[in-house]
Image (cartoon, rainbow, N blue to C red; front, top):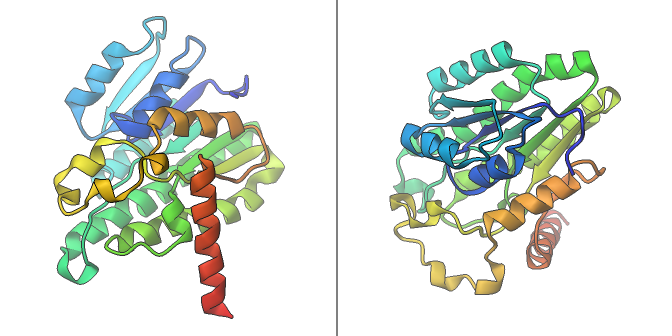
Length: 253
């Protein structure tokens, strides 16, 4: 459900997967869409395929693994604000042992998923507070609730997003700003076919645990106006996340 006050939406990681699906669902005549991605060709192709009745679609080419890319999107926010709905969806990952992987790659993951999220959220908040309205979706993962062998930094960065979302929501509630932490499980996106996941065997994941970007985004938007902070699409994923929390508590006790 989309609130009537939402007029400008900014989506990072917009050119594929979950980000692309958010763009498709939010491409409406009454909404100004700002799509952020690093791959220009894919972003322009998506723009051509979106609802032709949408007159305001702004494509922003930016690599959020770089300081320059983050700063560029911050400038866009200042120019286009107020952004009523910010979707921090851009993600990065690598599969393999932490000790065997490039440190630069691991730091890049934290820049995309932590630094970019912090920077863009900080940029939109003054405008949201001023108008006493705003919505923020931080795309995390069920990996935030469990240990993830061979994706240590990815899992840790997703756990950060969960903690950040929870604390931020308590800080901004007086201004009718809602924060959602979307935690999908295994989602059929191109990242699992990339070189970064060349050692990952997708067949080891049961079919019932895979979801489509469409189903993930539908669950997110349906819950956006609720008081639900964590949105975990799929009953099996909720069960997996709960098991992860239980295992963590056993380590504490």
